[in-house]
Amino acid sequence: MISDIPIVMAVAVITAFVAMTIISAIFGYARDRESFERETGASSREFWFLLSLLVGIFLILLSLFITLIWSLFE
Image 1 (cartoon, rainbow, N blue to C red):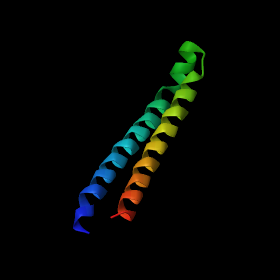
Image 2: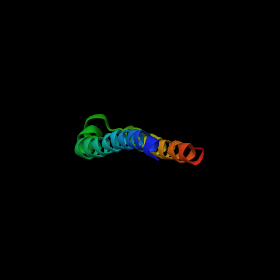
Image 3: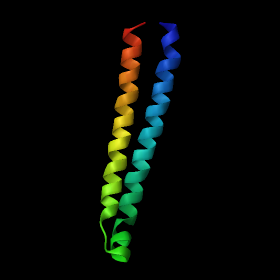
């Protein structure tokens, strides 16, 4: 049971970094959305924002799934 602590800590750190990336993308998107649309007239930034959100959620779920599988086989 003690050998699982480093794995759980590694997954927690990875999840925290991904969550911080998603949060900073959300705040940056909300801050710059109006000026981006005004300057370029395009809304393709929304696509990249949603794609980064999807990738972040996928990475969180992947790290949690790997931890679950790892803990089941020990």
